[in-house]
Amino acid sequence: MRIVITGASRGIGGALAEILRERGNAVWSISRSADGQQSSKCDVAEWPQVAAARDAVASEWDSIDAIICAAALQGEIGPAMTADPARWSATVRTNLDGTFFSIRAFWELLRKSKRRGKIVCFSGGGATSARPGFSAYAASKTAVVRLVENLATEWKDEPVDINAIAPGAINTDMTREIVAAGAPAAGAEEFARASRQLQEGGQPIERVCALVEWLLSSASDGINGRLLSAQWDAWETLATHRESIAGSDVFQLRRVLPADRPLTSS
Image (tube, rainbow, N blue to C red; front, side, top):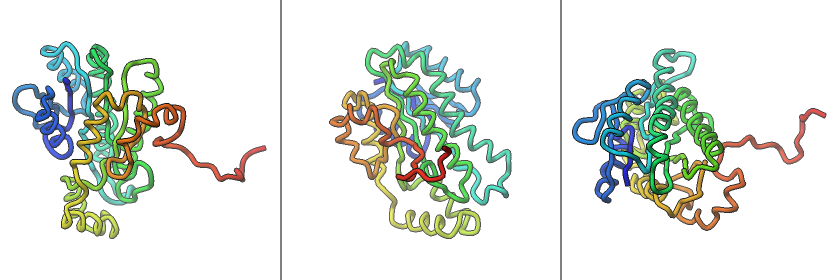
C-alpha cells in the first residue's frame, strides 16, 4: 500500500510509520520535523504547506491507498477562561483544520487508488465526555469525530472508508505534558492518572497499531464513519456485523433522550 501519515515523526504517528514500513508498505511521512526521502516538512494547520506536501507526493506517486491523520497538539492545559486565545486556537487548527486539510489535499490521489481507499483519523480524551482543563483538545477531537461521520455520509457512494480511533491511555509526550503542568492546571484527577500511567507504562500501543492495520485492510471494507476504541472495543469481529452496524448509531456521537421523553414540546 501507499500510505500518507501526518504527525509521523513521533508518538503514535511515528510508531505507525515505522511498523507500516516494516510490513512492506510505502509510507510518506508528513510532520513539522520530517527529514529524508518520501517525507515532507509541513505544519498541517497551514493549507499552503499541506498543498505543497500533496504536490511532493504527487510528483512521485500517481495515487495513494490510505491517509492516516495522526498530527495533533494537546495545547492549552487549564481552565478555559484562563487559556491564551491564540494558543487555544492553534490547538484547534492543528487538530481539526489539520485533519480536514490533509484529507482535502490528498482526496484526489486517494480516489485514484486501485483498491478501496482508507482514511484513519484520531479521536482523543474529551471527545465523548467533558474533560475539564483540556477544552481546546476535547473540542477539537470531538469535532474530528463528527467530521468523520459527515464525510462518511457524503461519500456513501464512494469506494472509501473513513473512521476514527480512540487510542486509549498511551504514554506519549502529551502524558508528560500533563505531569509537567501539575495538578493546579490539569486537575488533581488528571494529574494523578497521568503520573500513574507514566509509572505503570500505559496501555499497549501495539493494539492501536493492530486496529489501524485492520482498518487499512480489506477485512474492514464497509465499516465506515465510526469511532472505535483500540483498547476496549471488539473490533476484530466487526466485519461479521457490517450490515447491522451500517444503519445504526453504534460507535457514533449521538444525543441520548430519556425513555419517556419528558420536557419535549407538544
